[in-house]
Length: 158
Image 1 (tube, helix red, strand yellow):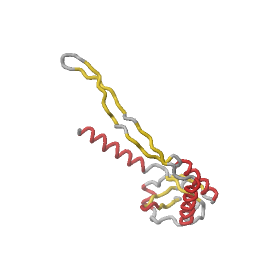
Image 2 (cartoon, helix red, strand yellow):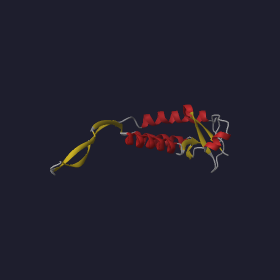
Image 3 (cartoon, rainbow, N blue to C red):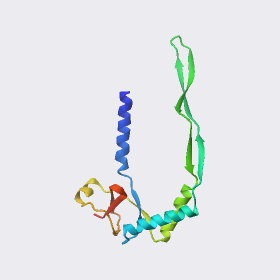
């Protein structure tokens, strides 16, 4: 049990460390106010929901099994089926992907493009006075982003 706990902690630590490296994708238009982008995004989501309504469906995910061989002391061997994950029903929205495309098309029509920026390194974060971006600055290939609680962010060009 102690070995499994160690592996679990190591795996979770690795996931948390790597999640800090993933790029952050935001809608962008140089000089645009973030509040204007947020309201356009809300309006585009509402429009997309009207055009592509929720289509809720259910599907059954079957159980997953593995097989192990066991041998008794006298030498009799047999195979045993072991349940890995039980089967379950899940509910999903069949139109979710299409609705996301409709939202993206609407945002493009409003003049906003999607950009992915790398997260700023700890050194850049230390040198930066953290303030939420209110007007989107020009970006270069050296630009990065700092996530701020509450879903806001700061774009930094060192």
